[in-house]
Length: 276
Picture 1 (spheres, rainbow, N blue to C red):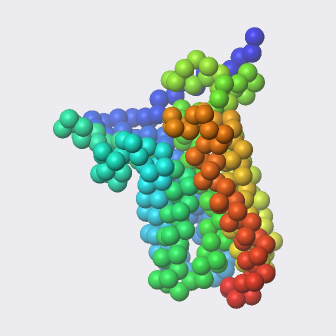
Picture 2 (cartoon, rainbow, N blue to C red):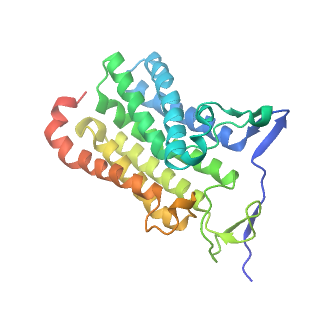
Picture 3 (spheres, helix red, strand yellow):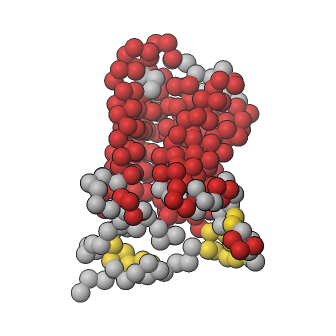
């Protein structure tokens, strides 16, 4: 008889009254801190001041959070949030006059990607930084941040996989007693590999010789991995049932197409103009 990992970790590390520190919140903080550390290394190597990175963080952090939050609320759970509009933005609920800090438990990576792009565009416009220059550098750290986020999902026993009888299968006992694909860990592992590939490409000078190339490959690799792993996940919302592709896959396709544009057409037509 095959032995499976029994996963029964509580999502909360500790709770004090209405406040609870969750593993997912820690994962989110690690995502930003690790991204900051790598970008500090990149900016320093290119002679960019630390103050520039600090200002960038002020744009990227809220852009990511707001984009990811709105992406979840509109694409995955609008049936609920259209009656609880304030909960889209506030990290707590006051149902029946009872206050409870919940954090931002519903976040969508596609919305986060849109939020990062918008925040980066605003930053570049404000500080006169070439947009594609910044996107190539951000591309290095996005999959690293994704690794921590998906690890947080695993601790939360959320975004679970479909049933599987494999040695790697996990029983999320807080959900049911069925062995399942640890889809969160599959995705996290892919993101670590993508991070290593893009960092290697940066060290080889691709960001300087082929502007937009790292950004294009980020979109292709991350969202192709997401597209394929979705086949091993349970649908997150009921309206996805019965459809050949779920919402995550449908939202991934245009981003993969955009990535193909950046590694083919963009660098040939605009590469010389955006080099920096």
